[in-house]
Image (cartoon, rainbow, N blue to C red; front, side, top):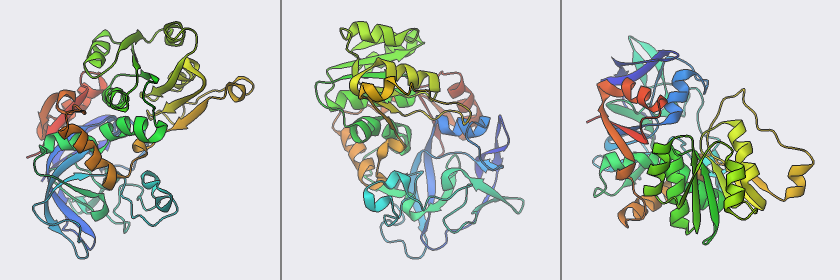
Length: 360
């Protein structure tokens, strides 16, 4: 089968690989679509350290083809969205309603038992997030499989596997944005646009989109931004637009320490800043040890929208079905699997809100 493979940094290729059948508590999926997500790009360029070679892909949807022994919540023929954070529901974090931090999540691209199902020429291959779903088929942990209604197009459903849930969840779960509040979103890429939609859904009165790109700022208006602010000197502009108070909530959706600092500056005293974007291991966020404690501000981090996939994926799709969450409008371009490397290049160049790779 075809898969998008990384042997060395900054070079993705489409190659034939082999896939072993599912073992107990595993599921085989015929993939329909995968989102080209920034985390895949971060593995490709080394921002996220990962063992190589690796099959990319962690945001996607498809049809269940085969289930291993012990799998009872899904069966062949089910449509499903894949979660890149498998959660067993029994670890320290899961029992505290922190499924997004589940300690069962494997490391290094292995399955839950520490072995791989992907190989090439007899040599094992890592699967990004135990999925590697930029491929025609996937074998993954059963707890990563979330069945969804067949009335949702799979290329639409794929988007909630990471970026949309992260952005909307940052607003609804992590920050618990209140109706009538003011919100600023720094960065209007895929996650930023999802965050803007989340703020609109939560009932924010004013939503400020912040970006360096005029094109992205115009796009942000389509998804619910009430005001747009150029990134240069954004904190000063946001303070002026809020009568010197600052915003109730600020979200950083890029992954740059200096931008998180700008978001904190734009947040009112007693307000909340949420770091959503994933940055470089070498980057840092600097806080003044005197000023920050006296400000009463909260700085929160957001992993996967603080989501429980089994609960939140159906909620996201219910918002889509009800016309409140625009998923189709986020798709800028679709690609074939052979065009997947170009999809990643376009993502790096900022051309797409979301590129979707059609796999079947």
